Every structure is written in structure tokens, then in C-alpha cells.
Length: 137
Image (tube, rainbow, N blue to C red):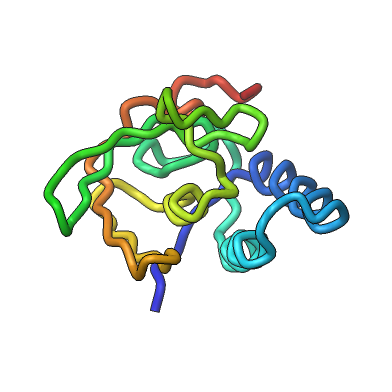
């Protein structure tokens, strides 16, 4: 059973719009869209100014530990138009992007990917827009 996740009202609204557009134009993998939809439906919605600073929100810069390899990786969770793998900007439409949204520091994320299941631990959030009162990202 998956843990509760948190999402800001603003992020939820933007992501619901993204899902509608992606579904209409079939621009992303249907399974990824479905998983994001499922995550949004079960998420606890919080206001931006009440978002705990240990929750991964859109545009958060996060350090993850791959529990299989022990390696750490850092990513910024972004909307698809800002994705840039070379600069570790991971789209919310990528499986790992969807997986980390709404989780908290010290949570373990298990997420199915084409090659199996990946396990990551959220080590820290380097930057979260809401914690810095940056509500316009």
C-alpha cells in the first residue's frame, strides 16, 4: 500500500490541465498519464503557504538515493516543457517524476518501470518553491 502524498492546490490544477491536454493529443505514454491521474486522485491537497518544507512539489530540487546501487542522484521535478535530462530536470510525465511528487524526506519510493521496480529514498530537498515563498513557478 502506498503512503499518503501531498500536493499543492496550484500544482494539482496545473497537472490536471496537463493530463487533459496529454490525453486529448496523445502526447505521452497512456500508462504514465494514468499513474499521474491516480496519484492526483489520492493526494491530500494543501495550500502553497501551508505546504511542509519536506514535501516534493513541482520545481523542487531533490536528492535521492538509489537503494539498489547506493548512488545518490539529484533531480529537479519540472513540467514537460522544462525537462532537460542533461541538467537533471526530470519531467513529471517520466515515471520517476510521477513517483516522487508529493512524497517527503526519508520516504522510500517504489515504482514500476519497464526494467522492473526501482527503489529510491528521498534524502533531502535542496530547494522547494513553497518553502521559499515562490508561488509562481
